[in-house]
Image (cartoon, rainbow over all chains, first blue to last red; front, side, top):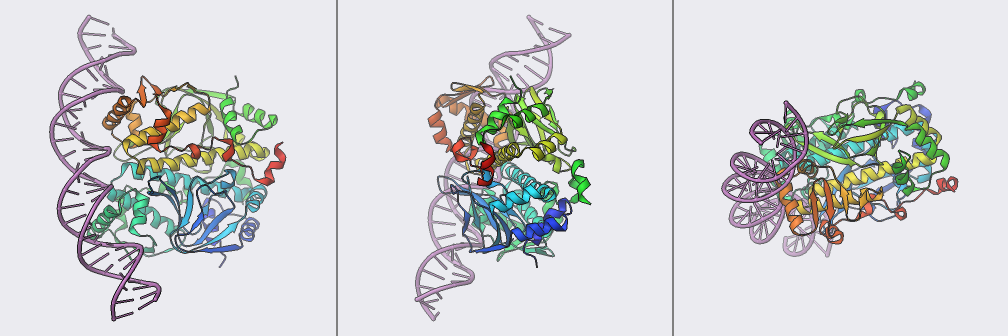
Length: 252
Length: 252
DNA sequence: TGCAGGTCTTAACCCAGGTTAATGCCAGTC
DNA sequence: GACTGGCATTAACCTGGGTTAAGACCTGCA
């Protein structure tokens, strides 16, 4: 199996890519690296380097506060890229770390520059994927700011499940989710204790079971409804995307 | 005065732009539009159109929840662009509205495509500015998630003041800030009542006075310190940015 | 096989911030 | 110069979620 096939599958939600451009992306990302659990791919303050494409496992962006508390601000699932264009900033203003063992493809800076200079369709698809990422970050502000613990967690589960589903990493109503409760807490801006309480409530409500690093969604409809989850912001539906007219010509 | 000079000034924090590219940007953005206070530039669900550059006034991105509550997820100050590449998405997943009368330059989609195709330096500078915007969004998650009302508000004031300062819109220790307390509440994910309480506390602590749409910072050092504000994430310091080597050649 | 460190679970107690509601203070405007 | 509607301010009361702490449950390792 082609290592970056999940990325390509994702990019093609936006628009089909010509074989040549797919091949160029595959060729450029042939260097694979493996990371252990809870290892940093890159640390806050470090000089930025090339782009990483997550092939397997789960990673996250996070920020650490002076008092040592941590806020996870994004998850990376297989097929996601960490920071298409970070090399434009001198130093990272946050860290990226793994949550479990991770396999990633490296795309050196020069390759990114070259690809984006030569392949307009690929470039637009990559841009699009960064727009989606931004949309997710915005939704997280709403989540942390305006939803109760229960809704918030329900919303996160809906999002993760939907994203994993779109890259073929769910089975029926379940998926692997290698997170501890306190990592969930760092994500949702809740205490670990309250995450546990809420998880128990969800289990009792027969909505969701999250145990042994497995997420089982018993009633997706109900879950989405309590969460107020509208998948629109994930832009996973081809219908919600469009190509600028000037660009469509080249796409057939 | 050139209408988009603030944008150009901002972009040149990243790297100086050749005259030709500046001129191209100025020419492309010669259509000016005026909006009233609390008017939408674009609404959630609408088809996306061209890019807008804020010349004067204050605008914001916001999302509305089913229960009618609103979360402001970003501010646009003069010199900011609303969504360089939104036209890659079919429909908006949030709205952009004004907070006071606003003057904006319109950059039609075709101009964006043309500029980004012809002018690599300008393009990179524009990319950079979207990276900065993303960094701000991430910091907002931390703000809403992990800081107390007092710290949170202090942090927002530090950020806004710094951003306005960088485009020359502050006088000494004060700046115009055309927000009501309940708009502040929508930003900080607090109730309007608690915003008022906190504002009073800040006034009493002789840190900040926010009255009559004016923000006066009495003790910036102290404010930054309670907020845990580290301006690094704004990337306004030229030193924190860098050009990829492959690109530097063309920049002299 | 027993121990150690991480994780999960539960209970008891507390407080930051939400909610409701009343009052005051404008700036238009007819 | 009264009337209206939007803001700001304050008080009284309540609750969701934080904190602390203790016990149970794992899993890997010696």
